[in-house]
Image 1 (tube, rainbow, N blue to C red):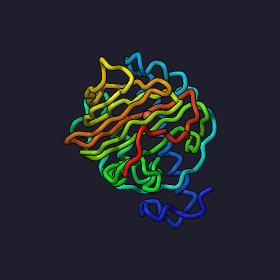
Image 2 (cartoon, protein in one colour):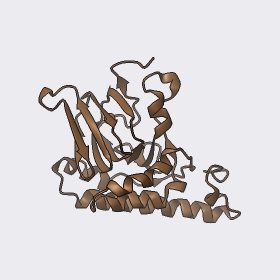
Image 3 (cartoon, rainbow, N blue to C red):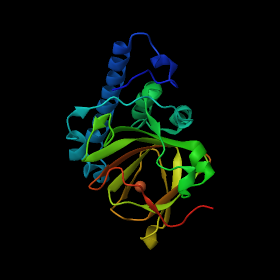
Image 4 (cartoon, helix red, strand yellow):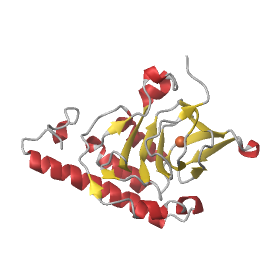
Length: 229
Ligand SMILES: [Fe+2]
């Protein structure tokens, strides 16, 4: 249970905490519905692998205290480059960005990503091990990166799909020489099988990615090919 309103989110610092909790749940449910509709309606075969998991994520909802990161303010800057099919999902997160628990997977002490990444990225989870919709089967939410960020080569046991909602990124898939480096834009996806080494960097635009993980430890820390000095 939350014991106080999120101090970083003034719109939730209300006197009536029962109403606040209801607002949090309604926001979470709105985003779950937006994600489920986006996945169910998407004709991309790569996304099809994840449709059952997203439809049957589980049953438990848990309050997740709002936490702010600069990436929350970058989110809206990805809207101008979003195609019609992905813009509504960005807009749904933009509407509820203040009630999100914005997170980062890595810290400076981990020595695996650079300051560019730590200062300019964040993700907001909707389904996953830590909730708000608690699932040990599937993990899903959005991630936001500012321009000029390098996400170094890493791997994890879960299979994953990135769907670019807005912006552009250059991906590196280290195990398929004929597709070593390629650019993906809004509406396009990148499928990453279990333990496949992958990386990307943002170019001159901010980036918003919708992600799904399944079939692995959903909070596994990725292993990196090199450390950052
Ligand atoms: Fe990944």
